[in-house]
Image (cartoon, rainbow, N blue to C red; front, side):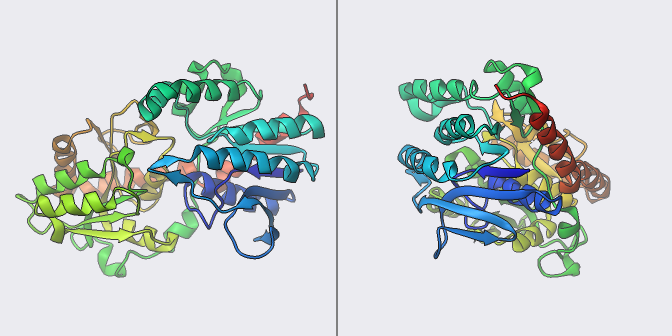
Length: 391
């Protein structure tokens, strides 16, 4: 098959769950004899189109800010969708797989799929529905409308989690038209990465960090709750060590909060890290905390599990990550308050004797998300789409 993936952000210039998914699936589809093209914003220097790790990358427009004032840029999404049409139309594909958010490119891909008689696949990383009103206020009506219109574009829908599938079904998409294929992880690669500082930090007591967070520093991630929870724990654990990996518009306020709460010396703001360095830091940590109020999947959760590191996340209407964690088995799902997060952390940090059991459960969970397993599933799904008559 000739397959095109469409998403404005492209790995490795932009690092996130959706970008990583496309990259990992693309490499493995190549290994199985398929031709893979990726259409996104031109984040690189040089030619607009070039080969990268066997895949053909198409830069359809100049690099632009994905976020403006902490929110996804609407103008960027519209420009990308408009510039995409002539570029995507130049080629003939059997199947076009579009990562849905931020929507407008889905309509472009739909038009090209009709003109070129290609199967259109929509990959849903999250469904916002009424969250649009929290995000944009009254203008959220238009976000809801566009999302609803997008859900009508194709009968071939992939959701990255059962959580997202349920929300997509609530949006009106028939259940039989949705297939769950989760994001994955390269377990072999992760197993070869040593903890930061070497094997000395592989044992529970010698781990460099007690707790780690990794992600973009935006309001929805609620990293302030983690900082406040660490401040509460400092009484019982004066030397507690917290690592915050990532960057974003909230960093300045979070650094100031760490100073105000008296834990600045206990917190390392590590900034963005290359993948190997990130995994090394997670492996050198006792527990990962993801206090987000909104997650379409929660890639860092399964990365932590692959490192044998349990996870604390929160109960929130739009947090799909809570569906990955089995409460009390491979981590904890708690109310989104600093007090409840602190209690969960205390259970793990303060009970060395229970750690091996919960760590082993996390490792077993990670086996469900091996990319080698997932690529087999997606190949079968794609083949099924190809066998259906075009409408």
